[in-house]
Image (cartoon, rainbow, N blue to C red; front, side, top):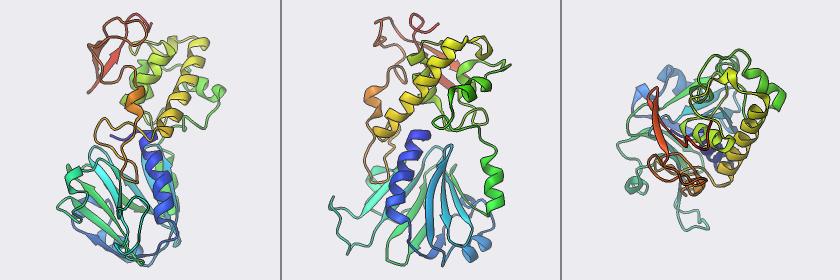
Length: 291
């Protein structure tokens, strides 16, 4: 599932592609992917112009000039693929751009059987919402509904200061790694970057959150920001065939120290990395470096 850096990358690049475009029509090929009345969706979206693209936690928010918002969650296999009109030249020589988890051999064959919602723009370009496993969704929300959704998430890790970060941990009797992945606690951090931040900070994923001293919390705060910023710069981790909104793979996997490396040597001390199941997710960590 894309985490904060991957969704932020898609947001930044879709912002270049679809802002100020008018949506001419919408095709809904699988109604369950639209988490609101399809009739309402088809009434309010066509004719609207895209005003903005932004991110909150792991969701993409597309603001329209009629006061409504398209809200996308890609979940496990969702993708947003933009294809401009074939008559428009591009510097890369292609006419598509994708974000999420594209089925690569189908990128040039759109729409396909996974294209569940299609947005047709007035200039002939199109945005395809594809989803192989059908866990993703798009909603149409008004401002009040969007505000309610956004309040469900914790603070953005790149926006808060250390004092605010430290307060989050007060009386939190929870294991640290699942806590970091809880979107109500802090927004947008998933399995990849929780593991990497804890390794960077030298904190065991098995530690109790309320047992961490201020020095360790400060290190975790700094590591989380550093790793998320690097991941955005590297355009995300392509561990699950994620690509950015221009169809390019991210390169953050070249900088990962523990994620998906259980059984391999620690890059810091050379000891063998351990693996533990936490909830439904596997965590790799170094017993020697993380206490």
